[in-house]
Image (cartoon, rainbow, N blue to C red; front, side, top):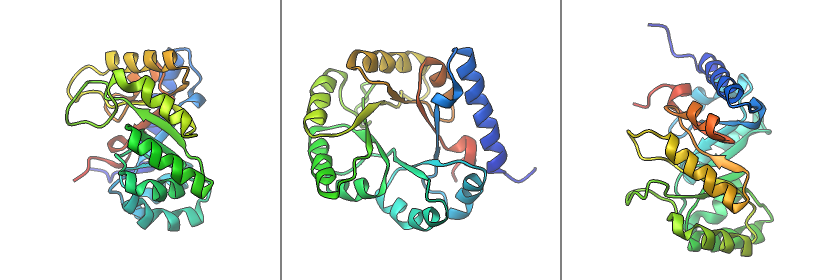
Length: 222
């Protein structure tokens, strides 16, 4: 069996994004591919950087702090996305390190991020995470709470770029993507962070502006 080659997988994923975008009469360049590098060591990430990939997603602040400063020394144009749940006490660390935060989901975190942005002068793009499948175990604000959370984010000075969601596992994702797109339109937001390795093409066809792809690039996690 040939060795896994992230650079080859990157080309394949980019082609799939472009194909889905064209089918939906969208421009492929309007879709940002976020390579989900959580749990990956630098030697697994470097081939993607060398192949021109620049947007990467991490789940934990501490893990990102341990590996990205050195990687960014060689690739300073890297764009880092925090895609995992964020504790309010880590807000300042996240604002300092990341260029985008995809998991803003509650008023206490909005307040913490607003203070951190005022203190550091950095204003990473923020996506409001919606619990689109109303799952107890998942992060994200309830659909009914979205207008109030958006208002709080605007009051706190957060640069809200769009909405983010993770549909329920083992179900057809398209209806959930369509619902998130509808909520974004109603909220006047252009950004849609949705779609992962198993369903990113569907997400692109429904309007995703950011897809978060891990295993399709790096192989299945052990």
